[in-house]
Amino acid sequence: MSERDAPGPDLSLAGQPPRFVFITGGVVSSLGKGIASASLGALLTARGYRVRQRKLDPYLNVDPGTMSPYEHGEVFVTDDGAETDLDLGHYERFTGINGKRSDNVTTGRIYSEVIARERRGEYLGKTIQVIPHVTDAIKDFIQADTGDAQFVLCEIGGTVGDIESLPFLEAIRQLGNELGSDRVCFVHLTLVPFVGAAGELKTKPTQHSVKELQSVGIRPDVLLARCERDIGDDEIRKISLFCNLRKERVIPALNVASIYAAPRQYHEQGFDGEVLKHFGLPTEPGPQMAGWDALVNRIMQPRHGTVRIAIVGKYTELLDAYKSLQEALIHAGAANDAKVLVDWVNSEELDRPSAERDRLQEAQGILVPGGFGIRGTEGMIHAVTYARERGVPYFGICFGMQMAVIEGARNCAGIEGAASTEFGPADDPVVGLMTEWTRGNQVERRDEGSDLGGTMRLGAYPCLLQAGSLVRSVYGSDVISERHRHRFEVNLSYRSALEAAGYRFSGLSPDGVLPEIVERPDHTWFVGVQFHPELKSKPFEPHPLFTSFVAASMKTSRIA
Ligand code: GLN
Image 1 (cartoon, protein in one colour):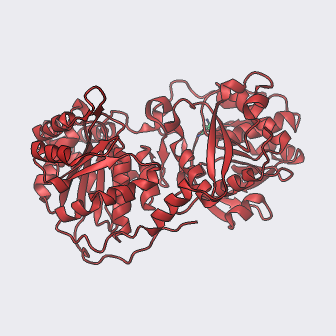
Image 2 (cartoon, rainbow, N blue to C red; image 1 turned 180 degrees about the horizontal axis):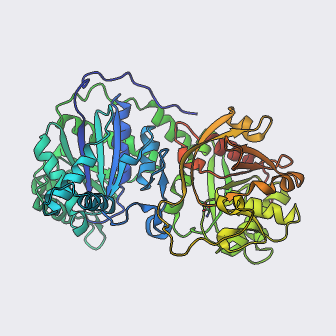
Image 3 (cartoon, rainbow, N blue to C red; image 1 turned 90 degrees about the vertical axis):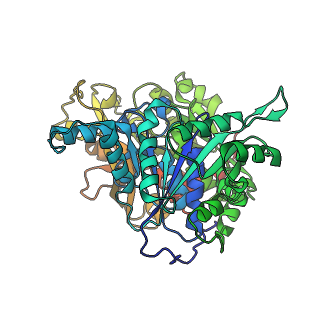
């Protein structure tokens, strides 16, 4: 597998305060601002700089934890237990540096902190206003906890022109003014659409977007022009003229076949070089890219062909809900020199008896990912039965582990009423809230009026692996640390019944109370984990469970 290059530390900035790069977006959303920010992070890291990457989200939710995956996509969880935007996943994967709670903030959190301070009387009777109190809180957040970072890259969510992003834009404008251009660089990403009827690329939306940004007092130092096709010299000159930027500062952001090819592409177009020039820093030696090039090569031209994995989940129409999962499978594919083809199966399609035989017959491996709520769970349980009975590798993640335990309890241990109390009172709560079984199995429904935000088990927890188990050999270690995001747990009181039915509780919390991993030793590869390993997989550190699952799946011969 390819390794991240490790350039020597750059000492030219030793002892200096961090420089800030603010990345805004214009015209439309979904242009790849997160990948652009992550690519700059990757390039600066590949030049030997220490980087922190942050995201400021303009919505009013305190964090994305309470949002539906349909609204927001994946909720990315950091080691320190923050529920954050999925772009933090890209930053971790592109720089290899783990994000923290202090790397993502929303308008909701800023306002709730300002209001809490007001209630405590900390503003000494002042009238609390967006400027300066809210903008000060934003500036404090941006500048706090930067550690030894030489660059702090801050992406502003949303699109310039949205009412809700104004306080963020005002805050970064003020910072630009206070810290000066040798410490602040503004990058703006826009769209240059191709209009078929005219047969031309159009620069007008970019001109308008830059105008909009200038109307709030921000002049971009570098412009990223997202475009479906090559942008000619004429268009670059036009953008440069109308947007008041030197030509070299207009960087075409072209489509790439894999997101991991974006850092190389942005480097070729001069992105990192122009940011460094803005700060008056040398552009030579360039970034060390051999590891990235080798990685992209393995992703694009794997030597061992393809492997088909069926992901049986609930949010299959919105794949952003499984962003880290998709990436972890790409990393595991590259580690095995194979291309993972994902077949997204809506679990509701498998609710009908025997449907799984048609829908899953080409799958060489079956994965049930995280999820919430009862809808589609019978289909997931059918998928587990199918994988278990036919010896197809099975990987259950969080909800997928809970489904595997319910399936095993019902079909192997003869516990007919086995269910999760997430779906209502259960005769046999093999999955439930810990408080339920510690109170002698009295099943209590969660108070409907209670808070949903911040009530989950979140962040990194240690787990002890049992000697001789599959997971012990896959990790090559007795103790692991993985990230969690769930309310419900597998009920330890069913351990002996399940172990008698062929299961092994191969990973437990250090106090021995929480089952974190369940496997079936008689099966080719059957592992359920209560945590989310996909959150820690990185292109240069593919997750061992995913690598092992993909390797096992490659050995499954295709039935059809
Ligand atoms: N709904 C389950 C729980 O809350 C699983 C959560 C998940 O898969 N992330 O425990």
